[in-house]
Every structure is written in structure tokens, then in C-alpha cells.
Amino acid sequence: MPHTTSAWFFFGDSLTQGVNDAHMPGGWVSRLAVQAHEAGLCPIPRATFYNLGARRHSTAKIAARWRSELENRLIPGMVTRLVFCTGVVDMAAPGGGQPADPQQAATLMDQLLAEAAIVAPTLVISPPPIKDAAANARIGQLGKLQQQLCAKRGIAFAQVYDFLADANDYMNDLSDGLHPGSQGCALMAQTLMAQECVRAFMRAAQ
Image 1 (cartoon, helix red, strand yellow):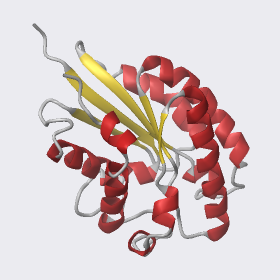
Image 2 (spheres, one colour; image 1 turned 30 degrees about the horizontal axis):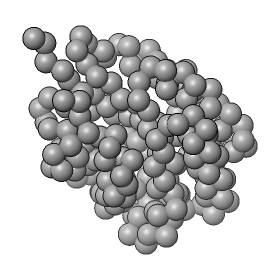
Image 3 (cartoon, helix red, strand yellow; image 1 turned 180 degrees about the horizontal axis):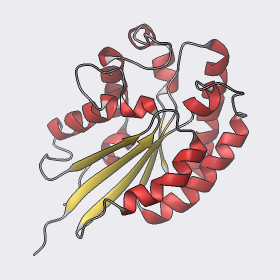
């Protein structure tokens, strides 16, 4: 009888990639995987975690690539789950140019979720805060719109913006104004694991 492998696919930008975490490559995604394993939710091995964060990837870029990146990694017997944490690139425009309108980014997210929810159980994580106040206002608004979309579609949603924006340990760890270091990534993982919807989502198939 073939083994069942539970696999989580995390799609996002450089914050998902964990570019500034010097102590654990993979940032909050790796830390969340370890915490879920230690909590007995998804024993390693066999649980598998794919960090598919990419620098400066907006919601539109993630929407264009997630399906092919998922399909290229599927194996027989794999039980898949999809995680999306997107929006900071849209709202902050770190590569230059004009930031997107929150409603526009939410519309793109809704189209992405319409497809993703058919493919596998899906979790959306709100975009986390950065240091720029104007961008943060847009990020907070986008997070609320994402939460509404998830409620409409019956998709799990984890709120991190509201918690982390008020957490000095997180905000002070944004050395470049955008990316958390080890301390911030650890706090984001803890913030996620404190939410029941995340713990339920991280529970491996038996």
C-alpha cells in the first residue's frame, strides 16, 4: 500500500522566501513547519514543505505561476495544501513605480482563489506590515479585503497584519524596512501557530 505524503506549498514574495532570516533559511515558512512538527501536527518525515516565495512577485505574478509550480512537484499519493501570502509587493512597489490599488489586487486574488480552492485546501495569510506608513495603510486595507474574499469562498484566512503591526519586536526587526530578520520571522510563525485555523490546516492527512 503506497504511503501518503502531505505537502504544503507556500506561494508569496520575498517575505515568504525569508530573505533576511540568517538563522533559518526559509524564514517564517521553515519555522512554521518546525513548530507544527513539534506540536505533532505534521511529523517530519513524511511531511513536505515547499517554499515558493520569489522576490518582487506581485499577486499577478504569483497567479501566473502557482499552478505550474505545483504540478511540477506532484507525486503519486501526495495530499496537497496551498498557502498564499501576497500583497506587500502590490501595495509597496519596492521595485519602483506606482503601488496598486487594494481593490485591484483583491480582484486578482479572488480570481486566483477561485482556481486554487478547486485544486486543494487553501489558506490565505494576510500580507504583513512594513515600515512605510502609507504602504501599511494599503496593506491593512488589502488584508481586510482578502479576509472578506476568503469568508465568501469558505477559505481559511490567517490575520497577521493586525498582530505584527503592534509588535515592536517585529517592526524593529525590519532592518531594510520590508523584511523581518530571524526575530521577526520567528514571531510571525508563532503568530500563525496561535491561530486555530492554521493549526487545523497544518494537520497532516492520516
